[in-house]
Image (cartoon, rainbow, N blue to C red):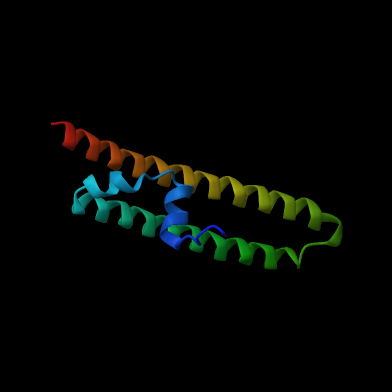
Length: 106
C-alpha cells in the first residue's frame, strides 16, 4: 500500500524537526509567538526576493562583459542574506521553544 500523503503542516514539522507532542505541551501564547516569528521572516524573505529580482533586472543594463561577474556577485549576496534570515529565524524559534521547556520545568 502506498505511503499516506502528508499535510503541509506535517511536512513543515518534519522540515524543522518539530515533534507534534511538543506542540501540545506548549502554551498558546508561545505558539502564537512562533507563528509571529515565522510570518515576520516569511515577509522578510519575500521582500528579499523582490529586491533580488529588481537587482537582476538592473543587470540587464550592464555591459555584457560584466554581466556574468555582476550576476554571480548578486546571487551570492542574495544567498548569504537568505541564509542569514533563515538562521536568525531558527535561532529565535529555538529561543521560544527553550522558554517553553523552561516554563514546563518550573
